[in-house]
Image (tube, rainbow, N blue to C red; front, top):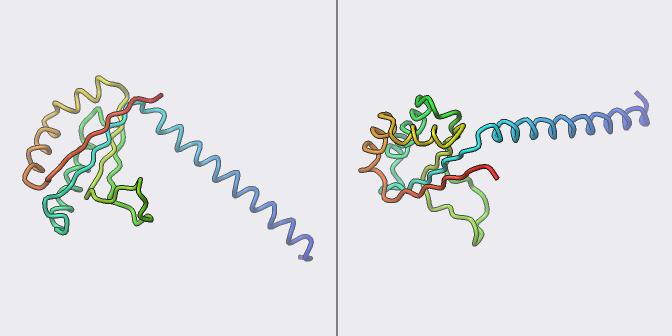
Length: 136
């Protein structure tokens, strides 16, 4: 392949990669938009250095996916991003649950799996903060 042909090929490949990446981002954004109610919870462990407590909490959060009205679950831990005044790395575990509607979120709150989860984590957590959001 000549130098000019190679440059054309590489430029075309880069452009196609950009289109593919943009397309996949749109697909992800579309998937999230399908669930207009978001339940985001941050947990602070009483013993933040306990790998066992963190693993127990994460396992419990993942179990919430079994609740019928929960459409998707994301479990997170603080990312190793730069320290800035607007970034809070103090929490231990977070969950994001997606629901079709407010009725589904309400059903989740009273579901026996959620009630058992809340009871199970009470001895482990020092603080819980919940943000419920509706699509704008």
